[in-house]
Image 1 (cartoon, protein in one colour):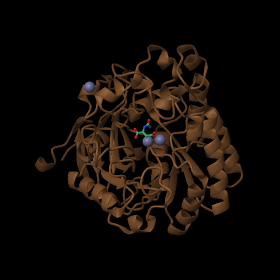
Image 2 (tube, helix red, strand yellow):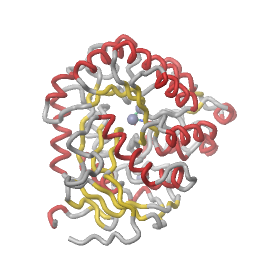
Image 3 (cartoon, rainbow, N blue to C red):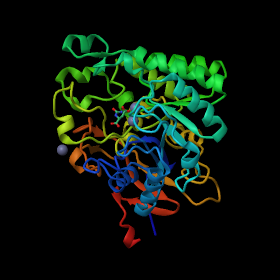
Image 4 (cartoon, rainbow, N blue to C red):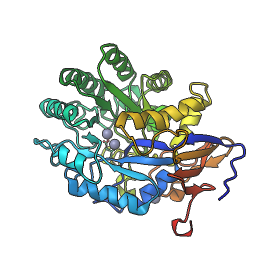
Length: 395
Ligand code: NCD
Ligand code: ZN
Ligand code: ZN
Ligand code: ZN
């Protein structure tokens, strides 16, 4: 089979450490099938499906289902993320060992979307994780500081009368869990870093020799809280869009390697949960199909990253952090390829209705980008050709 790659950039298949696929439980917003298509179109060959499904992915029954369904669909490896606790904000640790030993081989456990606010639970999870050799990923929000909060706590939110979510809600947990990881001799991964202070804390923790890594989302690299002027709930997200100074610090942190990688936090939501008042709308944005284009616009175009750097933050670092040994890792000579081709001169305009996700909640509607994934290859099989999902039956 011939792929016309003239003028295109070859990259290793992308790895997303943070995707919400909503199956089981909210198939009206995303399924493993629709989310896999979105991932492949975004250039991904591996995604990590977050645990805040219904039922919660706190048992091997759910995590094995997620892996098996992803393999059935066959467009991207869907690695299940296990929940740290049994149930939402549970007081009991989930059976991580059982999930790690299942067919889904759970490598990462998270509290994302159901904040572990109890430091003792986090301490026990970190201690347990180091003996199991799995990763704990932290949503980094002190919920007692964000009760009723919907937007970044700053002048814009104050003027608009929106309840403010302080930077301290994130930074206090980053600091707390860095120290807990140090004491437990464990690794901790910070989800969706959003503040300049988190970048400073990462530098500090690394300087102390603490095993801590962090991701940043494309939307936190592109958008700031000036978006709130319209009160459009499409811009509501956890953590909130922050100020321009935070955006600049996150870009610089990613360029310097203080922030390790990009993760989408792809969060589909139903129309009625986004087209309503800011205060009652659900937080979250679609991210899989637009991630690469945004990284090019925010990092490559301003000269903060070269294409080698794109490979690092979109594929190599996430694969290393989560310990993908047999899938989704960088291209090596002599191996079956997971790869992505990018057209750096493709002008395209985002339309939520045309995205592969069931939900349409993109904050990038009508924005035009210059780079687009044209081809994705999973273990030598083409999953996307000419920017369209390949017909698996016709391969
Ligand atoms: C996430 C979701 O919708 O599941 N939403 C979000 O705004 N990032 C959960 C979360 O991380 O809070
Ligand atoms: Zn989160
Ligand atoms: Zn999330
Ligand atoms: Zn819609």
